[in-house]
Image (cartoon, rainbow, N blue to C red; front, side, top):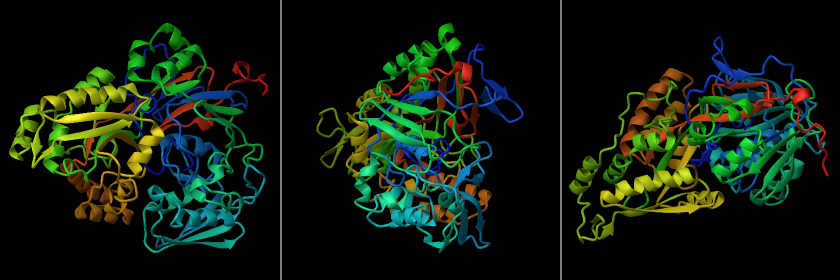
Amino acid sequence: MTNRIIITFMVPFYVTAFLFSSCFSPVKTTVPTENTSKGLTEFGVDSPPVQGDWLITRLSAEMPHLNPLTSTDAYASLVLAWIFDGLLDRNPETLDLIPRVAHRWEVSEDHLSYTFYLRNDVCFSDGHPLTAKDVKFTFDKLMDPPTDAPHLKNYYMDVESCEIIDKYTVRYHCKKPYYQHAVMLGLLEILPEHIYGQGDFNNHPNNRNPIGSGPYVLKEWQTGLQLVLERNPNYWRKNEGQPYFDRIVYQIILDDNASFLKLRRGDLDYMAIRSEDWVRRGQSETFLNKFNIFIYPRPAYNYIGWNLRNPVLKEQVVRHALTMLLNREQIIEKLYYGMAEPIDSPFMPGTPEYHSEIKRWKYDPEGAKKLLDGADWIDHDRDGIRDKNGIALSFEVMTTNSNPIAERILTVYQEDLKRAGIQMQIRQLEWASLLERVDARNFDAVLMGWQMPPDPDPYQVWHSSQAEKGSNYVGFINEEADRLIEQARISFDRQERIQLYRRFQEIVNEAQPYTFLMAPKAITAVDKRVHGIRVYPFGIYEREWFVPTDLQRYVHTKEK
């Protein structure tokens, strides 16, 4: 979608420094100020923005490919947001929908018809005009059965068709109301038919060289090293709304320590830092003289997901015990220095949708052992591992191989499980391989996380229809949960949805298909030469960033 910080659908991430940082009060020497009238943290917003310079940051994992419809991870989303446009955008402060490629839109009273009126001056980066044909092509390609996009298709399943009214007008016809239709139709990134209309879409050659109508083009992709975005010379927004950097460079750095050293050395302009690095190394006078620190809630949570197809993990009492054996408080205190908040449901704390009175699963090793004893999960063969009907209480949990914090979380957990007579193996995989295994349902358990949208809809992750091919990787199936999710989707009354979601959270909390870990806050360090920074309700918005002329670093750098 258009802005991947303010994301529209849920995308997976793994627990790493880039995406898993937490709350800490900045020392008084940092420059960012709090705008009390708007509740925003900001820096350099009063300076007149100018074009020029580069912005260099980090990717902590490399995406398998770049395609707005089939890419499923947050890392691809970050890059695609610069390359593609949607019909609409979001106001980052209010989260209201605003015009983008469509200069206006209409919604029928019955919420079954959505008409978008396109600008006539938009073109793709290769110079071809963007018309209604491309909008229809994008939707039709998304809904084409062979297109591998189950994480997106569920949001459009009640859209019957996209009709071309004229060259610059499209109308979507829906068979059922859905409170997110305007959001999902408006923020769907538009593909050029003349590029993506030929060949195998899922393995299209332009998945390594995406062509869109956004403000940047992919200049270079050096596998394992970096992705370089360069200003799109054909971008239609020549004045208002055009980002300011000549280039945006994503350096692929898997190791957290190496990335922090590059940041401190000045090789990176900004990145999210680990709470450990912030506490131990980030509060020095030298560091704070060079970087502004922005601390804000990140719309994300992490979890250990249990594959309910597994003969051991399908038993609810086992999952209850596994959650009771995870010492979240110790992990937060020891690994995150108290800078994280435990959660117990798939909604973000602090939002109206979050069920703040839901049962809090506490660390209780003795209680967990009693549960397992009562369910006949005992060590019948005296080998030190509990078993039942000849099946050992043993499983494997997967995570990425490039994040030591995830490994440390699982190592702490592994010891507590061992003391309770449970065997857990830890398998670390490269990010793309991990996604492949999860998509294939070829796992016992996995440590991952979800980014959350401003308009929560649990259908993608929790509805039973998404269990075999979709984002319901763990295979959670519950008729009442399905019914609540479906009722919420057709309700345009937020308070009614909140009540439905409260009961839904109670069901998930009792079933424990996930052991929910915590919701982080982000600690982001940004070079002080970068101005125009605001922290909005759903994070930072780099499209407003710029570097004043006298502070630009790469102004005289020429491509060799």
